Amino acid sequence: MKNLNLELDDGALAQAARTDRDAFDALYRRYVTRVYRYCCTHAGNRADVEDLTAQTFLAALEGLPRYRGRGPFAAWLFGIARRKCADHHRSQYADRSEPLDAANPLVLSAVEGLPDPSVPNPERRAYRNGILDCVQRVLPHLSPDRREALTLRFWGGLKARQVAAVMRRSEGAVKMLVSRAVADLRRRCLDEKEIE
Picture (spheres, rainbow, N blue to C red):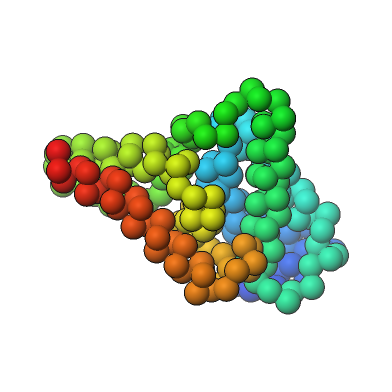
């Protein structure tokens, strides 16, 4: 598939990727940034994030023959990323070299990698940075389900139905988890900022 049509949907690319490395390359380019950002919320340093991202795509490449296309490719891929991140956490817990509840320094860098709307003045920029610092501190303290739904939705860039497939929850349950996570962040970061 030398002249790969990048307009192909994920399912068609996944089917073609079973025999054509160019098709898998197109899927990789389509999802690598989103998977990387998602892994940033689960690992404490850049090397681990890069390793988790690579492991996810290697497992996806090896698992393509088992992908049946019954659900969205993104949900299947992020299911793999989720398992790789869970394995990473288990190994960290077993090593006791890094506490699981430590604030993740890469969360902020993942947020900063998103397109930045122009900030009109220094006060607004300082306020925004304060909010991002707060999100970085509070995110590890959200309930695991809320944190997972939030990171898949915003750092992973998945739609609610795709998050539902990854988490094996209903779409309504995912929307509620995300809504409550955002409300927690708003209460802890925005409301407290306005009081100061």
